[in-house]
Image 1: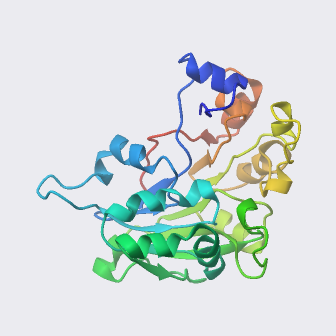
Image 2: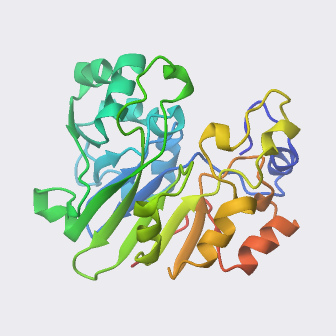
Length: 286
């Protein structure tokens, strides 16, 4: 935010400096040394420059502390940053097979990466397993939680079979802390409900406040549920209120969402429920 072709109230306020500008959704997680990204947004280069821990060590001319990228789906906003990472070393990419196949078939991701750095793809486990065998990935374990989902709009001919959308739950084996990252939730299933109950921190889909929010700026816009997102107003606010997590944060927030404006009642409702509206540079430890 602001979106380049949008003049919604939030984007106008951001251009005037009355609301903080925001980059596209991406999360970085670390046990102690190496970092892993959950989704690689088109804004990844600027996000790295804004966060020193993701920048190369000054002791060498080239390098990165980023050890891998976990994809929650094949959306462009989650995968285009991988093309920027082609300039580094071999990439570790974690994603269900259906997500890899979509990106390879329709975006040529494998072709591009193998022409530059190469990539090692990892199928995420359903049960907790080490995120990496190298130095035990700083004590981090992870698992995927399959969610209802379908291929993105640019891949309409892709088979709907397989897992096209996931959430991830991470566990620090040293502290026992658990983190749930779920930026794309079209519906809640038993696996996600259980993860909500036993996570110490939850980063949850805050894309839209209401079902027909986008129709206010684009008459042909699809409803939130048609785009694969539950809404805050009708569903997730009550869901997160019941979560015992210490940290409850909305991420993946669309530029039209009124919760971004600190003076509006929607923002007051969210914060009054003990939930944080995510922002660039937000950090916490478990």
